Length: 366
Length: 213
Image 1: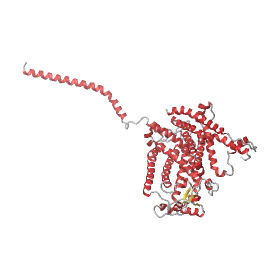
Image 2 (image 1 turned 135 degrees about the vertical axis):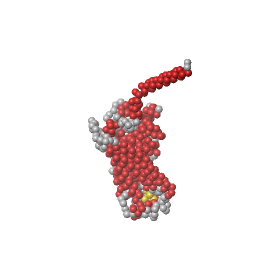
Image 3 (image 1 turned 90 degrees about the vertical axis):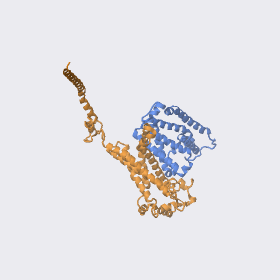
Image 4 (image 1 turned 90 degrees about the horizontal axis):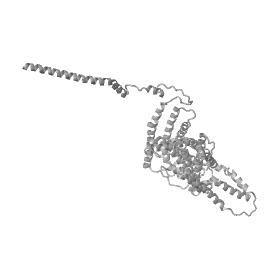
């Protein structure tokens, strides 16, 4: 074979091989496209399903209607009652946010701050002693009925506060300790006790107001007492049977206590036609009042116990030392002194004395 | 385990101690007897016993104003507790299923709420009076305070279990009831039964001597 013929044969062979390769790859590509192309619609659909921003939830319109966010029209139902036509109460979410994000944390911060400041004040100031020490002479400050009303209210309030705060803070404090099931039992027990004792608190509050309101109106000198902090920020000022701080506590307890009672009754007895909106508002007032009253109560307890010598015994025995009365309630002390109702040490009522058994006591109820 | 104990053997023990203890106390009191009265009686002993039992349900007018609170709170608690014990729906069911085999119409829920609050208020006021009044404080023994607190705890656990959703709360209430039943015969709580012979004895003695009861 000549050299020229050999070159032609090689060229033909190369051209055939290339054609065959093209055909092979074309067939592979065709086969691949045949397999893949039908899958493209599925892939597109899959991508759209996983991108919720592109395709709306087919149930969204239904649930929007159910929640009545845009169209607050009551539905129809056979059940007769307040709000029975509303499937999902949209303002309930506002209430939930208030309870979980406002009441619980800020309530804890408020009560914790008051408690912390009280402890700090005690560490700085210490216990206020009776000026001049104890004289041994006793003055009846609270008779038996007054003390019973006071402790009756205290007992009911403490039980309600304990059960109420377990309901509010239990999920944060008790679930880690008792577990979910243990907390649910505790919460159920507390709810029943809270609901049952609630109306008793109204009874106690009314007794308390009737018993103590007479001596808790504003008197001349109360403002200056408040400005000087009862002598803490300046010269000690005079006070009657109750000083300005005690009067303030009485009115705080009265206002917030009655608010607690009224809203508590609305929440407790859901049979008087109150709507869920009224219930939610009542709970907001109820929770806020409880937090405020408990916070201020810390101060009241402090001054009655650790803060001042001789204060607590007025609510346990009913009697205070004459020097205590003269130092902290000088106007009242003068009144009692003028009426001759200061008992000398030997006249301190023993168990068998007339005043103790209430036979000849000049004080009604003692 | 605790539930089995409370619903089983402890309940049986409590029943035996309760009824056995009461019987033993009553027999012990009557076995003391009394010295023979040789004087000619000026009145009927039985009449005096009955009259005094009735008469002591209301205070003498000389002391009534001084013990008004005590009397009112006493009736609030005792009558309230009696109604709760025998007419609260869960109690009626329990009595029917475990004791008598028959029941009666229980009071409605609203009545339960009202009565329980009256009973609680009465009990708390009575205990406060015991603690705050110098005389009652002096004559009160530890037993009296334990009895008051135990009754309060029994009532409280009962109210906590009112929803009847959790077995644990029911068992807790029944456990405190069993403690009360075991404590009852050996404590001041026996006055719930002994007030009748006690008043009767005093009334019979006085009436035989011609003292107005």
